[in-house]
Image (cartoon, rainbow, N blue to C red; front, side, top):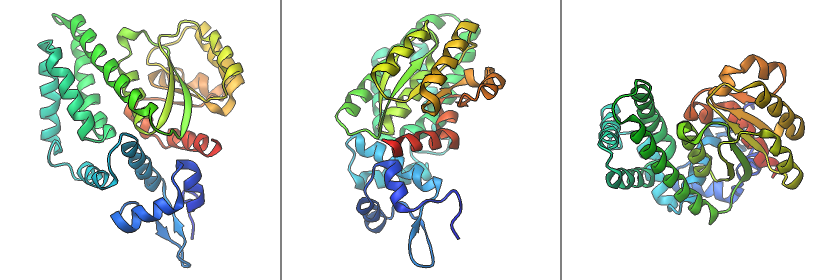
Length: 302
């Protein structure tokens, strides 16, 4: 019996942009994606299957061969090298922290390059970057000596990482094109860069607008381009900003969503206004079934 959360292969193709013959080949040749079968042998895909397909597409979009993708996915499921157990992840965190505190930009950039090319970004974000950012925020909030220089270095390095990812993404066919609007000041938008990178790694083409002080300009975007809108923020909005989000909702409808801690801060308001929203940090939002359902629906429309 088919569950309401399970879909057939044609719907999967619409959501992910992957052809049915390709899905069958991945399953048959590489043992990837193992959907349930009906009594008549028809494939039924779960949300977990769809997530696996999205991860595979993300790696392929980065130029990784499908045979290598199999190894990377296996490594992510059974972490044992940097692979690794919790102790190994913590070692990577501490190495990054030490380099950052010592302000060694020439060491930090190559290490980030190596990590982002060798491991699934979602795993790195969950196991290394997000916990490390938590440590850094505690350090910076206490204004320890040199914290402003650390912030600038971290920001510069992540802007570089996202730029490199965007250049690679430009060469690939995307599932969805969308606007990504950052409400926060560039100097404090640390979680924003993680979410930006997660979008790029999943094959979503981004038109980014950073540090927006006046959301009223968004109305001009809607008149020129029919692309969905993601509004990202981690801080409380003032009344004027809230009013502009409400206007954006009226223009974009279900093709708009608010992401980040700002959604937690204004949750009751967004619920009352029927504004789609997902709270939490970058990886929490990304892994949310609500977000994946939202972007899957857009991919199907496209």
